[in-house]
Length: 194
Picture 1 (cartoon, rainbow, N blue to C red):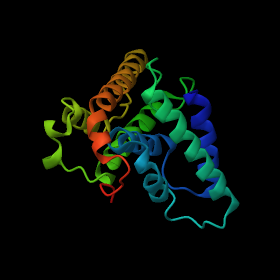
Picture 2 (cartoon, helix red, strand yellow):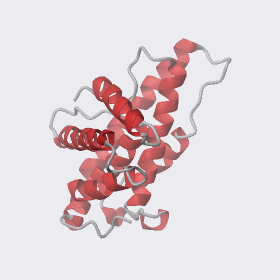
Picture 3 (cartoon, rainbow, N blue to C red):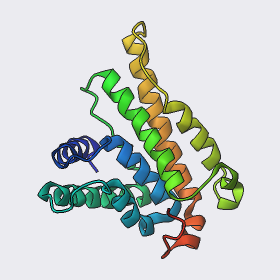
């Protein structure tokens, strides 16, 4: 998966179709759905992502195709043995403020994906089979409020951003692996999705 290329492609098709939101936010919600219910939830996720659009618009079809490709590459990265998963974010040549904003949107998207799957705070327990799930959700809620202050040192802030991206990458991969049994229990059913 080439996250930089996919981010730009998805951003372009989303803007042409008039899809609200950011590519990072969509990817975050997709990752939550894939972690919790696997591929059985992607159709509902896609419909939710495109729900306010005119389906006769040719650009909506291109966006649907781009989302399907994103689903496949993200699923392959999460399932792969090479630890290839990475959150979909702008490339490192983008301004730091843009990257931090996208990172916050990615986290917001993940939290939305958790709610899309019907998982409430009360149901986030070890019964899901994921020891680290609740901790990750809490951390992502905190990161979703990230921003850059005018007086932040650029080098320190860039390093902190890179550490957060790595934290998210590793955390989501860990939770994906821990939720394997939970996904197996919901396989073939999207009843958990609202």
